Length: 103
Image (cartoon, rainbow, N blue to C red; front, top):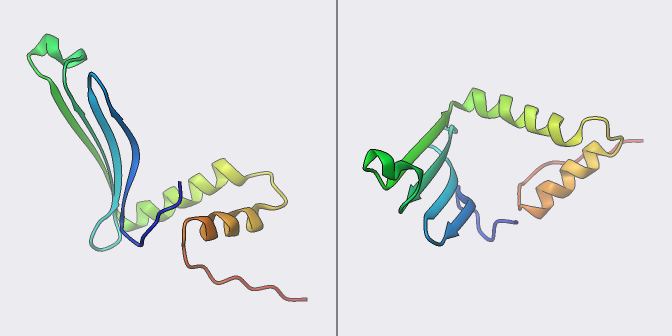
């Protein structure tokens, strides 16, 4: 889903039912990335007396770059139109990219 603003926070997944569940991603100061998940309400953790769980995954700026390449490979490997497809994703999400074409 395209971002409607230039915020550095994104909601990746959300459900509000018997359990409240949410996964977010945010760019950290310095260019790192944090992905977090929060679960509230009755569920698998009730056996241990808990009804809440939070987890985070923090990536350094270098790891964010490596993740970007891994995701590009996972989604676009083997496609002759990979450059154009990535360009379309950038446009869809409002990501500024410089495109050059020479002949």
